[in-house]
Image 1 (cartoon, rainbow, N blue to C red):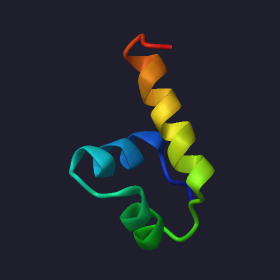
Image 2: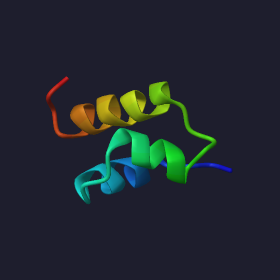
Image 3: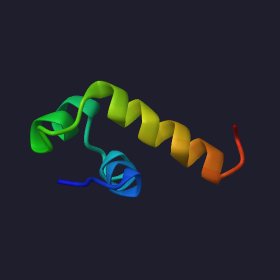
Amino acid sequence: MRIWAVDVLVLLAAGLSREQILDELPDLEEEDVEAALRYGSRCVGFA
């Protein structure tokens, strides 16, 4: 299954914790959530 970084960011923005996201999407790992945050940061010009 392919999970888009923006989907992870939307879940975070909706208030889900990293743990909740990892529970909801068992194919993800903590590093994937970190990568989504880095991607979002680059998209808005903070990295």
